Image 1 (tube, rainbow, N blue to C red):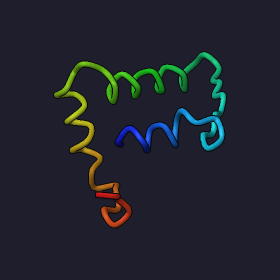
Image 2: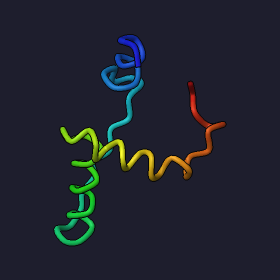
Image 3: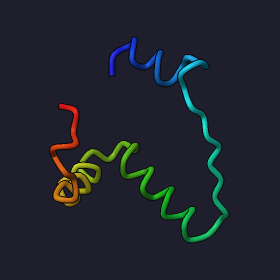
Image 4: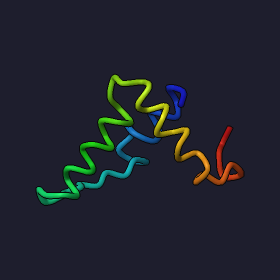
Length: 65
């Protein structure tokens, strides 16, 4: 995402959409935290393993590449 796209999608109050997400403590919250850590954490090998394992679930025709 380039700077102009970021400005339009995330920063401009006229074009962005904000949603508050809440989750009760419990199993779902723990799973969400675990997934966030896999995708955004510092362990590159763990993230790569997740992406490789789940890549077959993606319809490549929907990717904007």
